Image 1 (tube, helix red, strand yellow):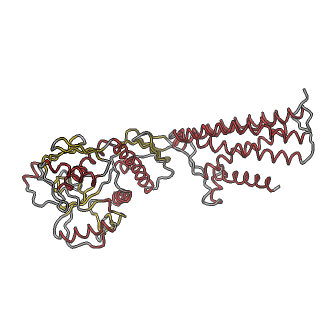
Image 2 (cartoon, one colour):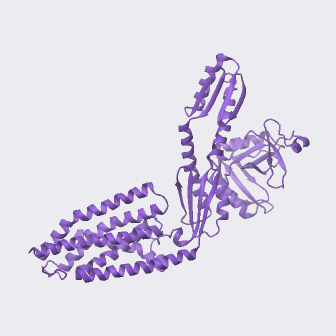
Image 3 (cartoon, helix red, strand yellow):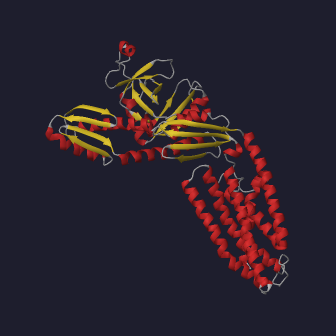
Length: 519
């Protein structure tokens, strides 16, 4: 008896999970963790973006970093300077010439200990060449993809966009689906910015002639000023403080009630920022975002505590957007939008309406057929079928799945399998009664002898759906999720709930089973 009550309890609980989806007006009366199942892009409408990780630019930046690491390692005074010449970087390969042939082995050993095993180091006479190994490049791309997905997710979540779908597709692509978003331009602008922030000192020794000619002195870069129309600011290439040290950024107002971005560094970044502002009072330092100078204020006094402000020609919205970018972190590589789609909410509403009609007609015909073919047992099978449908929807909502058109296809396919899972024991019961077995005994034998066939068929479908989920993407995964949930609920309802309801109907008596006719 306890087992039967537990089965009924699970079935009722599964149906209750589906109530907020079936009747959204009742959703406020349910706990917060029982919510309606969210609709996907093809049903609700919205925007879809396919992004590509710009690995070429990433490898160029990595080569530039390798160049600087090689240079600083060779001139390390604590370990002894290794004299070299002709240090250059071309096509991802950093090379230099060691002036003393006896120091080639020492140079290679020092570089290997500093750079690790991810860099291939070769030498030809006095010339040493360094490049990232293919394995290291693959790891860089994989790491850049996973980090980019997480950063894109944080940026979109900070904007309040609900139920976004962000996943990798292929080796270097990111698929972003934003249900309910009808204007993706602002999303694209935030996603597309690398948001790499650095702090540099301004080179005040650059002459007007040098600025006019565009030829920057060694160790200096001419970067465009975002607050002016085409002016450039000479900044030292050396990064004094990196934006990676930022731990928080918020939009705020200064004393003049102008929008600014307040920022706070972590412990290491705070020490660097304090030292920078202490050692360079009355000098200018530039705040650089993605190669453009946001502002270049004069350091009036030391700024302790690792906190500061970024001011400029901000509106409140642009200050909030910049704060979102800084909080979420810099992208490891630029992202390019290579495909954009917008699905209107009206199209999704039409799809839902036609889907409801089609599903209702299909379910109605199935119900009528089961009643006509199996009488009372058919009515029990129909009840089980409806419970199965509700459980699929309820469990999907509980797990946070999103309902899409392929997901609806998975539900329809599951209902077809559920009908088949009921017919198998019913036909077995018919055979047992015709063989002269009493009805109660025939019910036991019918379910016991058909369970293996039902299990085999459904577990095969479950294996296929798991493979689709593992190797598929986007709509394929939506289909696989609903199909997997449907297989599990079908086994529960058809092998357990159906048996309980039939036992209660039989009530321990050898009642005549109406759908069975003698040959």
